[in-house]
Structure formats: C-alpha cells, structure tokens
Length: 73
Image 1 (tube, one colour):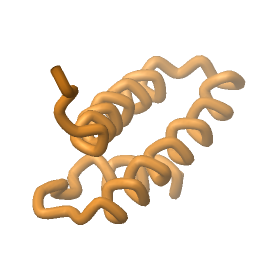
Image 2: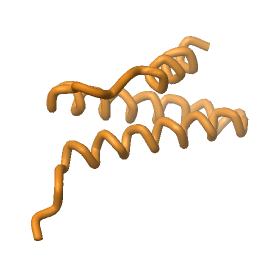
Image 3: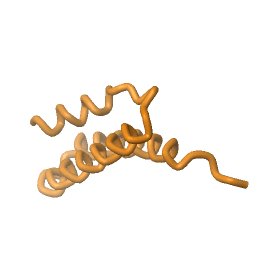
C-alpha cells in the first residue's frame, strides 16, 4: 500500500532544523495521512493500522507543541 509507505517515510523523517512553515506543512501532512489511514482502518479493523496512526499522532503533537511555543506565565 502506497499510503502506508508514505506514513512510514514520514515517521522516519528528521524533524530538526525546520522552519515554521515546514512545521505547519508537516503537521498538515500528518493529519492527512492519519485521516486516510483511519478510513482504511474503519473497514479492516487492522491493529497495525491503529499503531501507525498512534505513532504519527505522537510525532504530530510534538511538532504542534513546538509551533505553539512556551506558555507565558
């Protein structure tokens, strides 16, 4: 499946030294991948797909956390 290959490639990609626009594009790409995999998961209920979605979500959240920056006190 091409979609799973894209997801695994995204997961292995380095996320250091990214500009803000790169981070935004990366989170959007992750969201699109997660939603597409979810559509397949709804039909097959394959636990491997769920694991991939969880790993992508963790990586996406890390990038989003970096985008939001430090909270002001």
